[in-house]
Amino acid sequence: MKVTLGTTTWTEHPVLIDGASRPVTLAEYAAYFPVVEVDTFFYAIPNTATVAQWLTNVPASFQFLIKANRVMTRHQGPNDDLPLEEAFARYRDAVAPLVATGQLKAVLFQFPPYFTAIPENIDYLQTVRHLMGGLPVAVEFRHASWLAPGVAKSTADFCADLGLTLVAADEPNQLTTSVPFYLATTTPSLAILRLHGRNKAGWNHPGPNWRRERTNYRYSVDELKQFQVAIEQLTPAPAEVCVIFNNNSNRDAAPNALQLQKLMGIHFSGLNPQPPKQLSLF
Image: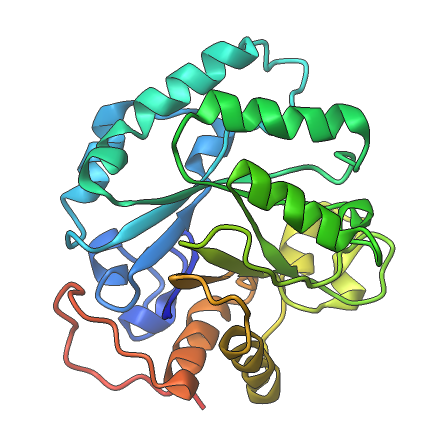
């Protein structure tokens, strides 16, 4: 079983460039990690030229986990009037360069908290599978009704039947607005962990900086070891487990990813040439 590690976005990880305040380039990021999550598509579907340009900055083995557009995940607001099937069609066209080179890890459907486990939404998952064709699809639920005791296995089995990778999300425990961590293999090729941090105080932060507050968290070494155990004990083992760190409000994602890499003794081959320096992780 292969384990790959990465973060959300590539620009906001100063540890990779000796703490410099400027944005990290994609080429610099790809010297350390073999995968990145990109949320650009959630807000607007880019043109194929933009996506193709990304590929010029990374090695052939590098892959992208990209978010589905908000119309596709039913975040649709008053200004999002793009018809559903057209949104899916445009999306498939935009990711064509990644598909052509084998560098699309998966399309991530991170559903909103109000996307609950009701028949209408269960049916919608079948629609997603149909409209995405053969593209790899991962789903992350943000309402506990999908992963409640006695329900989680049924959700995982349903995802397996549809060929959807069920994302295991790590969030603050025992909050009504968070979901339990549930790691299962629903597609033989890939399992995904997305680690948002465990900042209980900040998770429901009501102010304008709520997005920043909720992911302000650095995992301890002991907590990272817990993920190591969960990954190593995953049965049946998929061909790959991909771990994405999203705990980056205080720029902790890349340091934590590098720590887990060291703990698990993982070596990534085929990366961009790495600058000659020594990062301090512990």
